[in-house]
Amino acid sequence: MTTATAPDKAELRSWLPGFLALGAIWGSSFLFIKIGVRELHPVYVTLGRVAAGALTLLVVLAVLRDRLPRDPRLWLHLAVVAAIGVALPFTLFGYGEQLGVASMLAGIWNATTPLVVLPMAVLVFGTERMTARSATGMVLGFVGVLVVLGVWQGVGGAQFTGQLLCFGAAACYGVAIPYQKRFIAAGRESGVALSAAQLLLATAQLAIVAPLVAGAPPAPTRLSADVVASVLALGALGTGLAFVINLRNIRLAGASTASTVTYLIPVFAVLIGVTALDERLTWHQPVGAVIVLAGVAVSQGLLGRRRRALAPPEPAAAPTVGHVARR
Image (cartoon, rainbow, N blue to C red; front, side):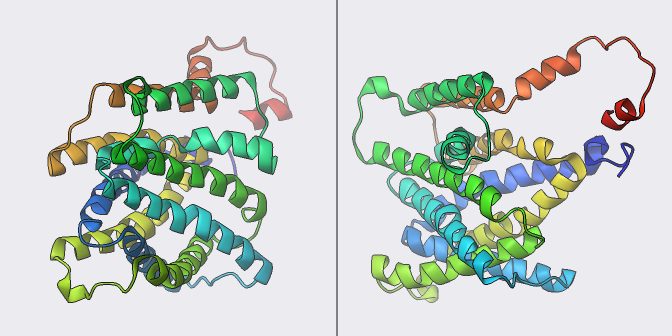
């Protein structure tokens, strides 16, 4: 690949529509969860979501003529990620919103995921290295978490418990991401195949757990059209199609740029929550969200990268093979 065709040189208009669409899809997921838990137990909302997502990705696999992984050891690792990175966090967000957490506040908690990824990657999986910059970003981000919680007002109550569950969901992602990087990402299987396998495993896990936790599911005919549509949208759009869009964004804009959709998700979650559900935030929640996102930006080196981009160019030097390759 030459520098002329590298993903980070893609024109803005080639990836920006997909980037915005992904932020809107994932930002709206918290609205669909809020609607779904009105009539369904959170575990059944998650089961319907992952089943619909698995079906969507199986269709994509068929269209691409791809296939599911064959390695039994890989399937064991995928089963772990399916539990801690799919079934558990999806369900915790459902419990949190059922306990009164606004959909837009759940979207804000989702943005704390990178703050958990870093210490897990450094201390547990050894896939990252702690630096002064990343440590500063982590501290700043967790100050933002305390501001979102409004700890000076005292703690307790169902709504506070719901917020902790949403933070727990983000923490699950924080464990699953470095685990996947350590044990799964090095394989040759496609991202669609790996994700389809994870969703199939999560569906099987939830099909066993859901009746034990929540009893028999309600008959589909007893559910409102809004609830059924929300669960299907969570699966087909938020869990199936969104992954395909994300892969395209990574190819066109690069992984670093594509990952900044983290900043867009809470924005869409707030806008959708206000317009569709007439939700209201207290002053400290959006302030805390800004602090959290600033901490994420610092820990990921985005602010420093911006300053370097604005710095004056270095004096020109005689080009060498290595110099040309780095540019």
